[in-house]
Amino acid sequence: MKKVLLFVVALMLSVATVAYAQSGQTNKYTVEASTSPTNKGSSTKPVPVGIKFGYKVGTVEGTRPIPVKKYSIRFDGLRVNTNQFKGCSQAQLQAAGGKTRCASAKVGSGFVKNQSGASNNPNDKSITCNLQLTVYNSKNNKGLLLL
Image (cartoon, rainbow, N blue to C red; front, side, top):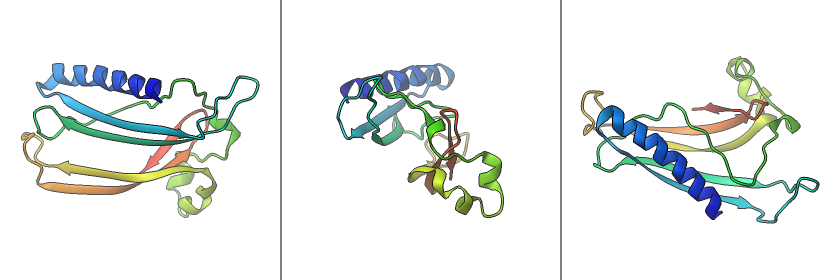
């Protein structure tokens, strides 16, 4: 668990450094993660695990954070093989009845809580935008986020 958290924090700090160089603001990331069960597996006897993951973005200055355009979530010591499970393509998910047809490919859910405002004023947090998040397996170790 500590290795997972340290890796994710290091990744977030590298993203924050790039963001700071571009805007003068410094994004601040808080990550909480756990796996269940915590049994160790091996290459010959892998153990399936569930992952709980929480991710918060703020700024050191207390302003609205710089939007995160892309991120990758990895866990030290875990191997991912999404091809062993049902999958769904973006086209299938966006088609009529997509949520129903892709129900067996659902691998996670949660909430996105966001404050937004005028793009030229990072202090403006006047717009609240809270969204339900559903994650679907799209095979080849990728996921689709539906907001």
